[in-house]
Figure 1 (cartoon, one colour):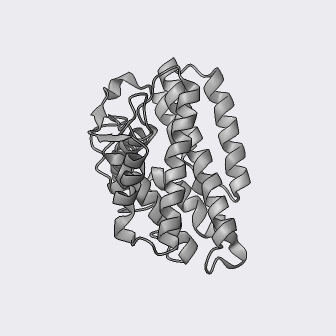
Figure 2: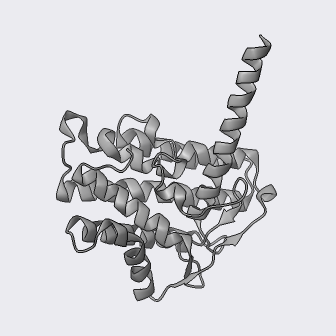
Length: 243
């Protein structure tokens, strides 16, 4: 019995370390924006995902190589008058356990059989966020992450409709690679998005990935945006980069 308890404790410790790594990445993604400016936040996510789509199309059409997605993504932002700045940190102690649990639930795309099921899941989360006991800042951050995931699914669907996927067979794009890419913020793509330099404890980084009111994104933006574009391109081409 003691041996089993030791194993269980060890597994929990490993899960805790994985969660810390995950939330560092999550907080990089949800970015810098003026709290209380929901319209601006939505537009920022849309711009970020639009640049992901453009980078992916350049990759699919062989205008750039897989190793050029990061720089391409950054250059798109620069061409739009948005600066690349260093990521900045917040105190993890500012974020509640409920908030962290909701973030894990938001990026759980791999649990859903269809993209429609996952989008419905995001709608349910939005309703929960509105009635939760999260602080206003946490509600806004969680909403941005939800918007990010929704836009990601929409962009993947659009790109698949336009270019088609190689070797998806009867499974379709979502089961073949889409839900893996949508779960990448949770670490499903090893060595890709997760390897973008996120450091610190749970929720330690707010990485200015979506452009803030100061028209700037964090240094992690290029790695993350380029990584997602590469993952989508890999899914469409049949080389799903870890999915």
